[in-house]
Length: 76
Image (tube, rainbow, N blue to C red; front, side):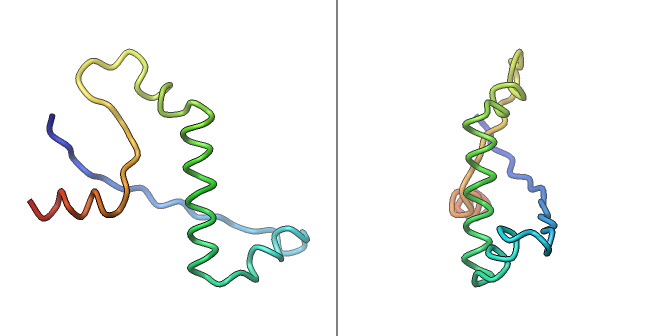
């Protein structure tokens, strides 16, 4: 199978008047990024978004890949 990496950038806009949002934006930027990525991955995989996207497809499959996996493939 041939893998073609592609990206999409998500942006999270926090409501600064909400206590939970204030708590999150006070995190270190890298820590917040890791947390947001983990939350998004959980939503995509646990909520069945990938299964729905791939439903009925016979020629290609959408999947999540790590940055390391994408970087390894681009070096080949």
